[in-house]
Image 1 (cartoon, one colour):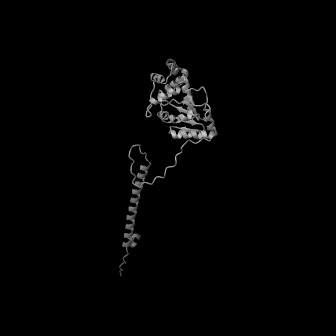
Image 2: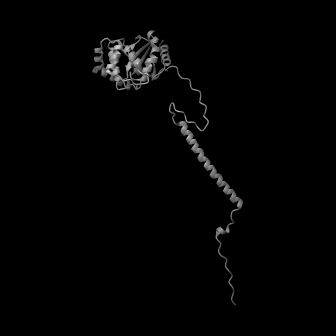
Length: 281
């Protein structure tokens, strides 16, 4: 008697044996995926906006051009700090020693004016082609003249001829005028004609005309002194000496124990002189 074999069931894979996800769970997963995508998109937009705002805030604004508006509300600016009304005294002993060594108090110095024993000496490093030196000569020096006249202040000129190609020649003219006792008169004539917005150039002829205007008597001697090798060397040495001290810009002022690097308004310079006089007094 034959027997009928019992059918063997087909093998079932493990995956097909698991129940499928519940429809509610599947819906929740889809919603979470959508939310994550939205959050990622928002983060990208925020980062881009922040980068743009930072770039605008930190980029320089050219004077005279309208500032770029920031997409964020501006933060109120802090009130400005009180500005000093005068230069403070230097306290470093080594620096003070160098500063004091620049003061000559030479009664024969034709490029100085004021009482040789004045309590305050202002050493002025200047250039006839420097626009800020022109401003100093036109706007500040007249406001100090009474202090020179009453014996409070002595001014001593130093050449730092570097602004233009003719700066050394103008400095040489100053020395030539000083040789005839007319330095400050030449100084006044040259700066009165200078444009404080420009860098004037000088020639022997233009400087000769200024010398005549300043009352220099012997113009032939003036020309010879102006162009002599001795005068050329003297101007070059003065500029080199200033650079060795670290003075590279004009005007530069040493006022007893204080320093003013660059142009400052007359009120500031004058108060610095008065403060230094009070310290001596």
